[in-house]
Image (tube, rainbow, N blue to C red):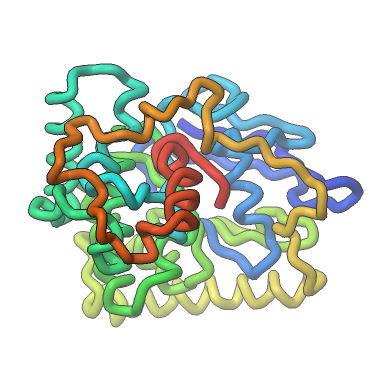
Length: 321
């Protein structure tokens, strides 16, 4: 499914990733964890085709990645920047499907099915700013599911929500993975989360970023927050991953290897070359689904609108993390 061969990446004379090799099998859920500055976000950008590695290659289904693949989706931590505030929830989910053609009815049906899958069947006619943070992140996940990618990348997807919502979203990802058999690569700082959701945990070292260890996660399924986290196997694996991450943090310099130096240009898929205003209008715009004249939510401000533009297409086809 996914092959990373001798991948290295530098920003000028600053090496972020060095000679990285990784294989991810079809239908596998792999957690990537490591200390700050280990190159996790840079690695994800290389996989998503947003930046071209200095050397080495990334292959998806045997094809080298050069630009953003059509069968890849990304869910980011900052849900507020990945949803268009003037579109309904349903239209946000359906937006990327325009790239694949099909009728308006087919896009609507796919969007409604994805919203039902994430527990938001009744939220389709609402606007993102009318939802809680956890619900907005569910919308982002629904948009990725509606696109039916062969590979789903998740970059710290639960870092901006409270602890209870985080657990709910972790369970949602496991449910989706089991139901869809989708290949998922999840980047996280949370050691417990990496063990709880993963079939395998990849631990990165830093300065430069490199793979320090890979641990198979053999825990009973289906996983459940209380039962699984109290399982002796989970406790042992959590301790081992924690030991490796602490060792990785101690072995590197304290700078941030993911930080791009000033002037570094990252290729972005957020605004395609053929983008037109029509790409951000609802499929089924009617007076009751337009942005309300009295909208005062931050999501309806000019700043919020601009942020939404940055993430709408990227939510389905990749974007800056």
